[in-house]
Image 1 (cartoon, helix red, strand yellow):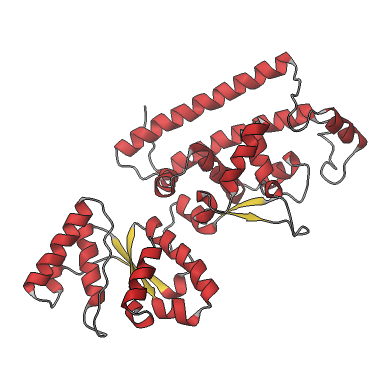
Image 2: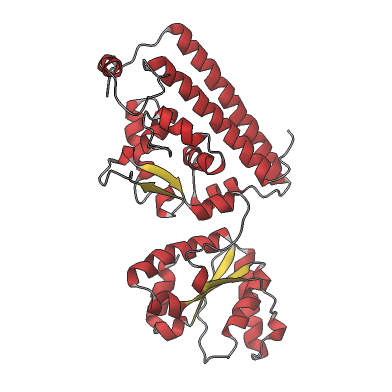
Length: 345
């Protein structure tokens, strides 16, 4: 199986698969609702639509579909599944060759399953092609719904009502997509208390950029953070030889065993704390994300600081970097520092 040449080729293949699913769902909408071709569809509810809604079985019921239509949809679903399998085979071959595939990286970092990956792709599509700002309103029978709602995603991917209800858990606050700020659920411009399934899905801007291959820091943390490519070596450190040796061996051991290493560097300004952190990162082969703790905790409100902590932690993962909280020992005492360090993991 031919591997992907790069990340973008894989991403476009996945988006093409999603487009086929959107087109397939569009066919079902055109078959199921009278007046679906009405140019004013979504601006009003016609009597014909109400009659059709009354005929539909609703929650817990079974909809009767003509055999010919069922067979056609089965063929289309088989084609889409075959495309998915081909993409997965090419993805596996690409990973063997060391090609970086950002969608796969996200799935590994945040433990996303295939359905969650499809949710991301559904949200990504209108960020790259404005045609979806016409398709999504049409599919949702509302000209104001230019982004996919939770209901649209569930209807497209999960036809059975029992499974739909269970799949709501993917959109709860503690679910991976929302907890890690990969997507946001938004309310409409005129509605302040939408149900969960009526909420709009918006993929986070930093995640859009990450998937497209951009590595700029999240703009929300950019004014107090910087990414450093570690250049310092242990030979550069002005420390006792035995201490440097212990620190270096510790860095090598934790790195080779792929275990997280938590260190608190204490000392006056200019004592080489950041240089020591850089040396550790150089041995580990990773970058260093430096965060100014004074700005993070003293200048901003507590609520903003707590929100930014999640973004900082996520940024460190996306950048494959260690996290260095500068002036941390000034803002917190020793015990508070260790407690907060635990909260960051």
